[in-house]
Length: 360
Image (tube, rainbow, N blue to C red; front, side):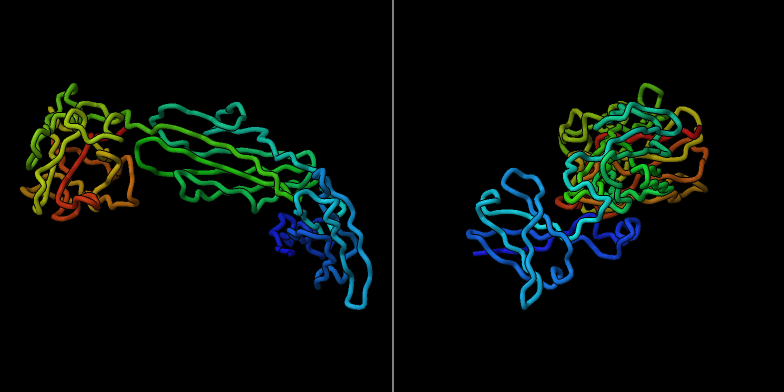
């Protein structure tokens, strides 16, 4: 029995073939067989050179013969490992087929500050989200594939910009701009591959915990909290104790507050000892389970006016942030409309902490 599968090779990128002075793509075939076999297929008709992985895992030139039906490749099962091999058709002259070494991170800087290049960079607790992340990669053996760069923050794609590619020196540089994000822990993952047959891949991880260092919604600063209701055993004072970290994986009355579980609207109001200029409010969710919809409101001309809204982005979130133009206020509230709570308990408003950002 023989199984043949076409693989996506990193050098199938048209730009790579053009850069190498060749219009021919480089194909790879995954071969699984229990006996020696002769393979004929259309891409082999004009093939000049075919390599296969031998039993020692190194590339060896395959036996290729012309037949009435075109060119054929003979795969000797005694020369491959466990009945499996890969065929590499017409590798470009520039390709180092034996390369199993990924690119390396040569430099990285965040907002102009150079950092040691490594697999994981932990920024710790920060009061500002990284604005611009600039990095460069190098590979000694094969060109880097610019289209291979993948960047995500918390699993969501993070676009890269400012590419500078010098394949003559196997170098790639680019920038990332994370932009506005919610408070809490975040992870940026990056990977980039070269154009070797197995697309050797380098990975980089950047971790940081984004906290509101200008939070004035704290009892220690004179803030007061009132709520529409309380679930049995829960008290609102936990919302302004300054601890936004303990509640992420908890629903305990010692670290979180919950409203009565009714179909009415629920709210939390924060009052300050004197008027303050603020430009944002963050809600830290019990058990990382966000409400469907929450409004930030201020009391103006005898009524509550909405400044902004937070909508649930995903099933689990550490926090939700509502940003707005700076406004001077003496109190602010967050309102959860009827039936707009967490997915599993829509009539409950369940929070661990509220922070209100003082304008800088």
